[in-house]
Length: 84
Image 1 (cartoon, helix red, strand yellow):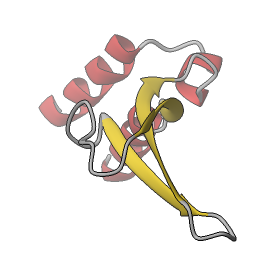
Image 2 (cartoon, rainbow, N blue to C red):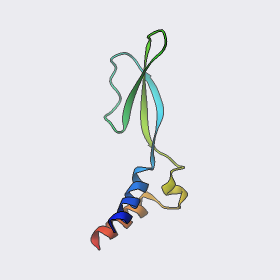
Image 3 (tube, helix red, strand yellow):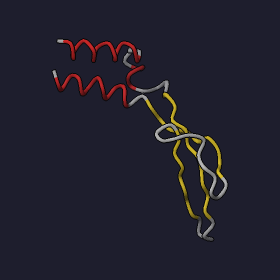
Image 4 (cartoon, one colour):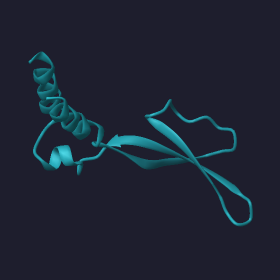
């Protein structure tokens, strides 16, 4: 049962992906807390730093959806396992 529950939880966790949201100015705070928003910093060969905000979104091509499940289906399956 524990292994099955981990598989269901993996489907839920794997539905997220990050996409570019916008560039941030130096010292500018992200629009929200992690894990919804993250900031990536990169430095080019001239030493210039670029700060990019990425935003977490639900991926329509995630395995959970490719298998034909909804988030509610998987949450219910986990609840059923916990109740057993």
